[in-house]
Length: 152
Image 1 (spheres, rainbow, N blue to C red):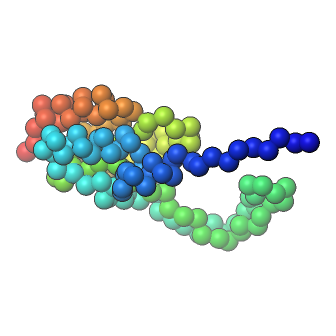
Image 2: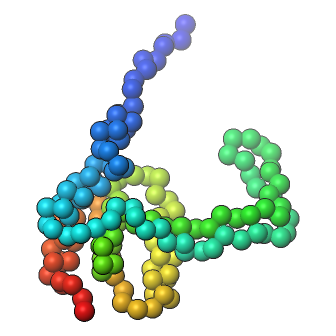
Image 3: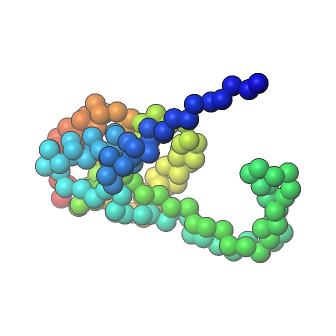
């Protein structure tokens, strides 16, 4: 006779509901710290298109996640690659991205490099960039932002 597993409720779902619009506790803490410091920001308010979408005009077959069959994706549209930073200064002078512990960020390093290239190619004044993995690093980023002040 097989043992029956006890079903448990997922903590993530209830935690996510209690955080409001923020996706993680680190994002919530970061927003509180930014507000307390007097820095004006938008939360996930700007989406950057790093690589435009396009239509692949050739033959293209792709594996399926669960099945053993290949799927024909020939002549289909390919979605653009986009990036939405967590916190962006109202004046665009700084960007804070929070990345707590999460194993599913396998595509983030490449997306981040594309974002750096996008900003560099765009020209003009570059924002200060921060990738923070804990509350202490967010506090450090705020101190650096305040020490550098607003740029002319």
